[in-house]
Amino acid sequence: MMNRLSKALPKLVIPELLESVRVAHQEHLNTTSYAKHTALQKYYETMPELIDDYAEAYLGVYGRCEFSNPKRIDSILTELPILHDKVITLTRETKEPDLANKLQEISAFMKKIMYLLTLE
Image 1 (cartoon, rainbow, N blue to C red):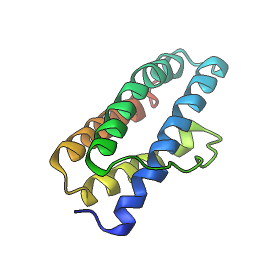
Image 2 (image 1 turned 120 degrees about the horizontal axis):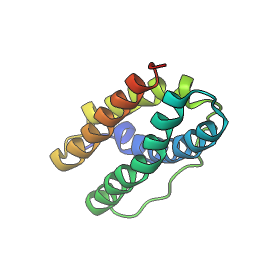
Image 3 (image 1 turned 180 degrees about the vertical axis):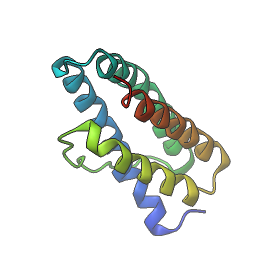
Image 4 (image 1 turned 90 degrees about the vertical axis):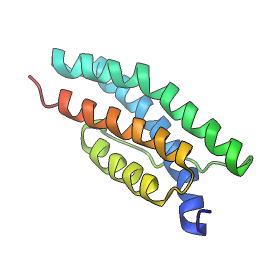
């Protein structure tokens, strides 16, 4: 079973992931780089389903809970690696295999997007 800290972490990370989708969409519209434009589009189109799958599985295991208000993200380009580190930490602390697998899917997708954002 999760300890108190790791049980609280999803309640913080899920809203931040959702906030990252909003910011990615905004930056997608503002960028002049075609590579960033397409990578950010892929992020905001794919990530909501991954987040929702994880959140619903989490609620299925641990029951209903209140999620915190997300930390405001100013730039997906600078915050994505930080948010990815939080997902990695959460994955390591998760004892439920199904939840860990969903987090690994999110992590792998985030790594792909971080790579795509390096392209010109």
